Amino acid sequence: MGIPESKASGKGGNTPRETPKPEPVFMEYAEHGIVGRRPTMEDAHLLEAPWVDDSSAIFGVFDGHFGTKCSVFVSQKLPETLKAHPKFNEDVQLALKESFLHVDKEFLKQAVAEKLGDGSTGIVTLIKNEKIYCANTGDSRGVLCEGGKAVALSEDHKPEVPKELARYLFREYL
Image (cartoon, rainbow, N blue to C red; front, side, top):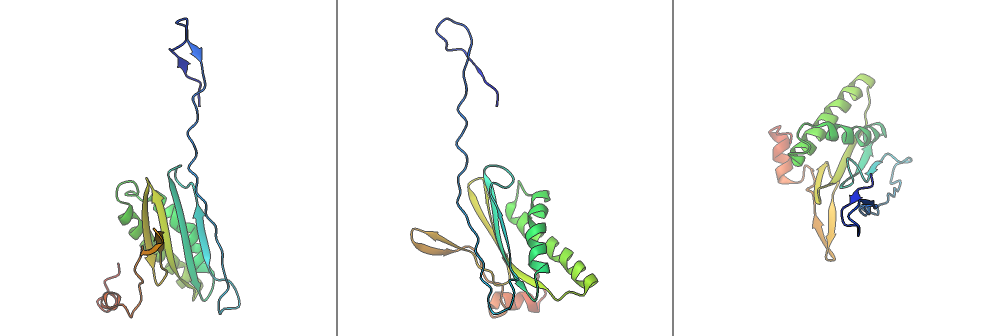
């Protein structure tokens, strides 16, 4: 950052002065994982703040099933896919949805080629321009605490949910 010249000096000259730097965006976050019924940890996390710029952050939890390859793949590929999406700055919801679908297709190619049985559910929260966006797949759930009350940010994608069952039966994938 340069030093601007001041036009407000007492003798009409230009006296350099430093412009105060804006306060950095401050955000606290952490991750914690617990091995459940499986003998090893199969989950992956995504924590990037700031992310694209000082006003954005991305967080995700990917619940690996039958291995770590899928959850790790998604945690690494989803942020770069989302950032490169042509509508990322105009339609964040569309960019999130299409990025999830793209990463899913990419992993499926790898899974077929390598004969993998891995899978993953996932939840991603994106903070961009003071707005919170949330996207999920499977039964990973996003919840916001507002005024001491839980506010759902996502809906589970489970076959017991009538909307999900209909989507599956009629092959309406997202």
